[in-house]
Image (cartoon, rainbow, N blue to C red):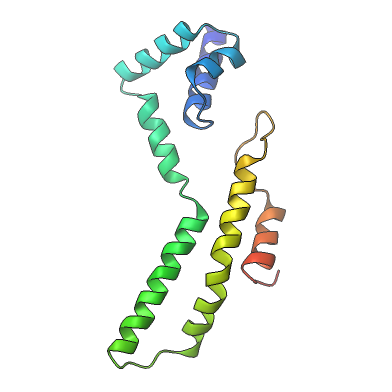
Length: 144
């Protein structure tokens, strides 16, 4: 039973976090596809739907470039609204907007490169501290 529990947990992780197909999971775990499907159906009946967990995981992993893009759009909109209303706009807001705009494409390119790179087996999916500092320094211009 312990072997099934370990394989079940890994199958669920591969499906939800690694976005693997049932065939890929079966191949990696050296199990039959039918077994993986049965586990998935059992989980659904128990209220632990793998498809729902997969969707929730994807939603929680909103790409940083999307957040940066939305923030930049909000900043542009607020500057425009203030200008139209005749309110003074601080130079800092213009400066921030000018710094953010060219970096959206850089961040997107970086995320695409990381996404396409092969992850080693057992990777946690987190970004190492040195990569975060590199992005802060080179892309966002934050001194480290």
